[in-house]
Length: 96
Image (cartoon, rainbow, N blue to C red; front, side, top):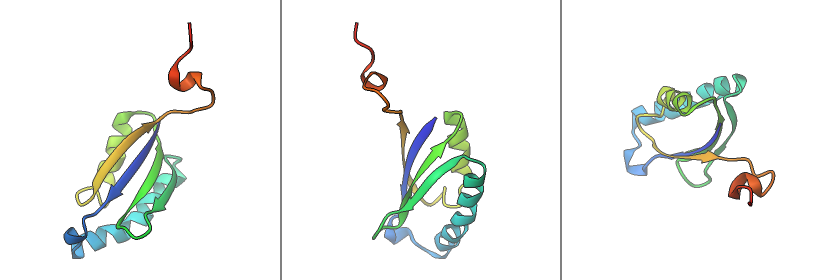
């Protein structure tokens, strides 16, 4: 299962504890990439946050990985399940 996870911080919430968590985030990401759980990650230009694509076995696994993130308690998350779009039928269903 693939998920697009958008996360960001409110600039007013940035403090020393948040900065420390942000600095720990790349090490966490590299571990997930090595495990094949994180396909790619991007930083939002001009914002405090990122867009990551996870490839996990279940909703519960994604929830666990997000909860283990150093920035989990500081960030706001938007999570979207992704579906392959190889053929139109994979999105709209097969016609009768």
